[in-house]
Image (cartoon, rainbow, N blue to C red; front, side):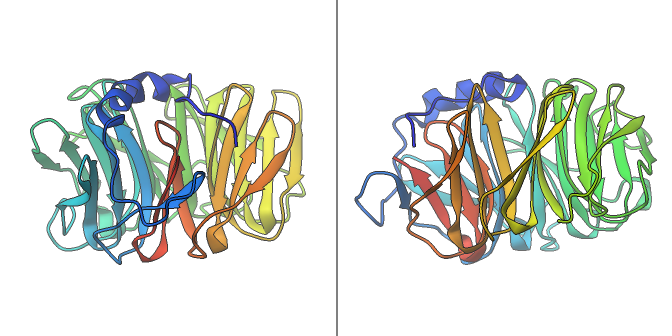
Length: 318
């Protein structure tokens, strides 16, 4: 694996502030080797997503858990989710200034955590919807965010007014199959993938157009939206797909279902079942050795790259 820096995309800009904050933050290491290394986790709950903020890295997971990476290790900052009812959090994203960590999950849970003040705002059950939310994307600054939430019922819920009551709308972009992942590369432009092997693109945050994917034959789990002609999708059977604006290019990495991926500037990572991590060097995907056999659910590039998953697993690249 090459020596990585943070992604040069919309999300890189907001994460760069977090890199300086975390450069000295080296949690307790459970293995001393270089490469992917297990670090101590304060939970046995499954962790479903991880993000860099202006104050460092945060992870979210089952039971409404939110963890923060500190100089003394990972610690709990929230337990119970935005409502306190213990609804699991399946997706997270960060405002462009890195100050608010947004998350969404089961039973309509939506919240925003101010990483500088510790203040928590509850936006759960928009339009009285209490279905499961699989993922979330936000663009704009703290307090002025556009919020996009992927519904398990096949609906995309969105607010152009920071999630305030009465500002939410929804659309069913495709067949009504569960929407598994959402990612935006600009204020109102991004991509989603659903359970019907479909990739869709929006340029206004509300209208979605299908751009693929014929004959995929696997489920889609993750999407990395870097532009209208630069989209990466991860899925079952070890498959990764890349859209260059003209055609889709498939790559078969093996058997593991790949749950998340990030690619930029000719380098990338994808993670999945059985602790699998694959490293992209601009031409091919190569398996990395990891210290875990737990299913990995999400990753974030940064300093260091971090992946999280089942059983509270946290691995970092050193």
